[in-house]
Length: 612
Image (cartoon, rainbow, N blue to C red; front, side, top):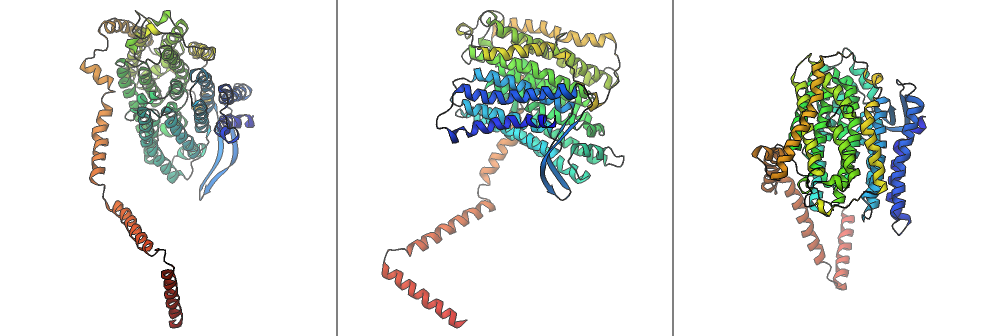
């Protein structure tokens, strides 16, 4: 079984290497069917290996842990690291999401990206992305995890800027790469501190050492806050959330992969994996919960004001990841991972459905140009509606069960009405508003200017993933992962019935508000008040960072373009040029000059020998 699990990350890597190496062996570009078979097939087989391992080992023994030692990676003093995997139920849930949902996105991409001139490069990047994410979730030490962490950052850069000929896409890719590097730097410093304090970065050993009564709790607090900085960057939480809306520049299946199955969930996984350290620091736990609560509200209000269908879903992702951070901060570890899983199902469904809408409308993304599409693309409408119901957490959907766990735990965390529970409930209302607003504007009412030209672009290879994801989104609430062996059993209290009733009522109230908002916006179009303009701009964070950081840095660079370092480089270059001109003057092509120089040099050399 260990060998089977070891193949899970290797298969996408092999697919990537084959796709990249094809030009070395064949002059002609292979057919799209062959490229899709390699890209989709490698991830599909990895998903099958994960499913077989789950059925054979983990369902029978929920407390099972599989350790896989492949080879020694590095040994530097006390630091001994290997390419080793640690697979428990937490890692397994992530592996099933990455390979399972990743496979469906790959399959959908085979139809969505057909006839793209860079079809092979696209699937090569996707496979590398899956490989990096699997390394991240399976790693048994923080350095190997960091390798996968940086790998998904690189792949996100490549995929967001996939259509690089458009400068806007390149700018969005650079923004994502640079902003997430801020968090990654904080995380790297956190790893240094942990190694300095505990002399190991092996995750099980680190957790055991930190649990010792004599461990330095202040150092643990600082290190966990730095790890939170890394998680905030990768999962697009405040204050590093600005890169994610612009990441919509990539192909829509890429958006589904980044938002549902891979990159933005990495921060949630990191905190959940290191939860024994966070439990030791009340300050770190409070910081995680506060970041999550603020993010889910700010991103939710921004989603209400958007007019681009993909940006609505982007802000929705930021908000839902905020729910997961809130859950982690209040100790609802299993609830956070459960919501991560259900979110992967319905958010992938929403993005892929949005991709079908965009293709059917000839790449139109403005929701105010849509409307009445339920008549022309009924299957896509059904899938999008199911995704919206799950995102809004309507009763009996998967989103309801996972979000309900978070809200109940937030209520129990401070024993009653508290700011974190209130933020979660208000977030549920806002989610219902922006979710059904986009549903009504796209599919209900009269046809918009773009809807008139609508032609269903779904192919069978795109329809199958949508159908499977719709089923998982509806029934995913029944697939509660047995994470008690990882996080322990939490004794749940049963709050008053009205607390549960509030959680159920919020998305329904949001639906009613969204209908009224839809009726008004259908008449007025994209007219915005000052408040909605502020929300539309993402609460002005881009403007703030531009004036606070970017412009001062550029001004300083222009003023300091001739500093000491530059003067040293320029002086070296100028000296080299002058020396080159001096030596070049001696090369005049006259043989007598060359012979005279040779004779003079020989005499000088012999004189030196005699003198010595």
